[in-house]
Image 1 (tube, one colour):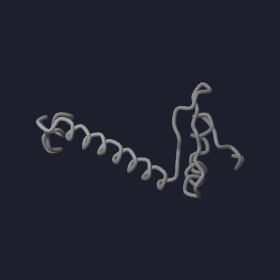
Image 2: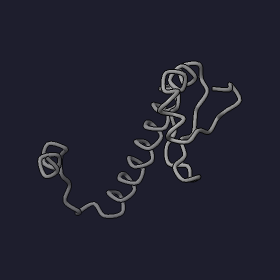
Image 3: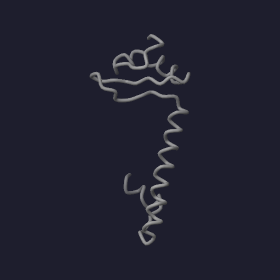
Length: 86
């Protein structure tokens, strides 16, 4: 696998999985394609965690805004919501 390859087909990514993981550890993401379309990415865990944190902050801001605009709206704890999805 060439170090300049930032995009691989699913077949090539599978064949070079260890190298793709090593690249992610080194800070280089790899885009995985299927039939020429980007479908996934293997990214450094730091990037993934930053993305997850940004999503959490975004939805938290939305929830805070919605509650401020509609203070009488019922709210639910995670303990009440999670069992509905298991």
